[in-house]
Length: 428
Ligand code: HGY
Ligand code: MN
Ligand code: MN
Ligand code: MN
Image (tube, rainbow, N blue to C red; front, side):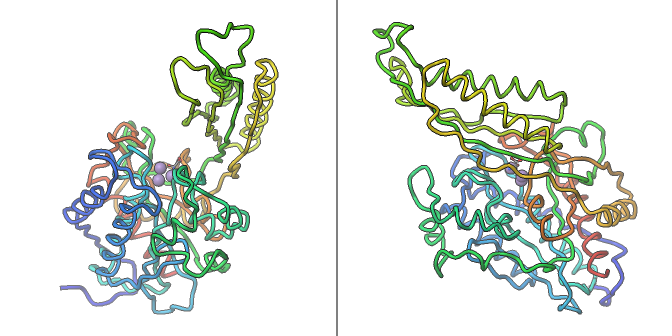
C-alpha cells in the first residue's frame, strides 16, 4: 500500500532491480549488431524501436510524454506548483557501433525507475520532474556529438549546419529525421531551443566509463566538471599510383601522410605537460583501399580533450600546423582541415553537488567527487540550467565496447541517489 502523499523527501526508497535489469536487457536487443555488442544509430529502425520502448515505459510510469522536432523525448510528472521551473534528468540510448548496453541507457531507464521509486514511496513533487531522452548523444551518423542537447541549449550554428548535413550514405539529416517521424514542419529547428529558465536543475546518471570508482570500491561518483571535447576532420590527397611501379622519390602517399599526422596527434598531446590531455584518431580511411595501390586520398577524424580548455586549444593548433607541414614535406594536398566542435568544459553546480552529497550520506553510500573525461548531454544542459552528474562504477572502466558492464546493485545505488536528489530539488 502506498504511504500517504508526502511533501517531504522519502525516508525509504525501493528500486525494482529485477524489472530494471529486464528492461536493460530488452532494450539492448534493439541493435544492428549481435549481442553482447549494441549498435543503435540515430533514426535507424532499431533506434525507432528503442524510442517506442522508452515512450511506453514513460507512459506506464504515468508521465506525460512529448517529443520535439528532432526527437528529444520528455516524460513529465506534474508537480503541485507546475508553473515553477521543473527539475530535469535524463541521458541517451543511441549507441556507437559495437558498443555496450549501459552507456546512456542507465541514465534513461534509471531515471524512469527513479520516478517509479518516488511514486512508490508516496512522494509528491512540488516542482515538476521531467525525464529527458536526448535524441542522439553520439556523433556517429552526422558527425556531431550531443546533437539533441546542443539544440536544446540553443545552438543556432548547429540548427543551420543540419540543413546541409548528410550521413555517409548521403542521406540528409532532414530526410533521416522525417523517416523516423520527426522534423515534419520544415527545417527551422529553433522550436527545439529551450526557453531560459525552463529547468531549475538538470541531473544525469551515467556509468563512469573509467576505472576509479571500481578500483577504490566507492559506489557513487559526484561529477564536479566535464572535460572540454573537440573533434577535427582532415583529408589529404596525392597522385596515388601503382604500388610496385612508382619509385619512392616520385610518390606523394596520402596514406603515409595520414599515418604521420596520427602520430603527431599523440606527440602534441603527450607534450602538453598534463596527463589530463588526451587524443586519438578513431577514423582513418584510405582510398582506394587496395593493397597494391598507393593511397591517393586519406580521411582522418581526430578526437582530443582536456579539462583545461586553453591547453586543449594549443593541441588543436599544433595538429593543424603539423598537417600543413606534413602536406608540404610529402607533396600531398591538405584538401580539408575542419574543426567540427571545440567546446568549453562545464562546471557542475555547487548546490546540486551538496544535495547529491547529502542524498548519498542519507543512503549510507560513500562517494567521490570527480571529473568526467567523457562528454555527456549534461555538458550542454549546463548552458541553460544548473547541472550535476552521478556516476556509478562499471567493470574495469570499460565502455564503448561490448564488455561494458554495470551490476544491478551499483545501478540501483545510482537510482536511489538520483531519486533522493530529485526529491530534494523538487521541494526547493
Ligand atoms: O565520447 C564520449 O565522451 C561520449 O561517451 N560519447
Ligand atoms: Mn558514449
Ligand atoms: Mn553516454
Ligand atoms: Mn557521453
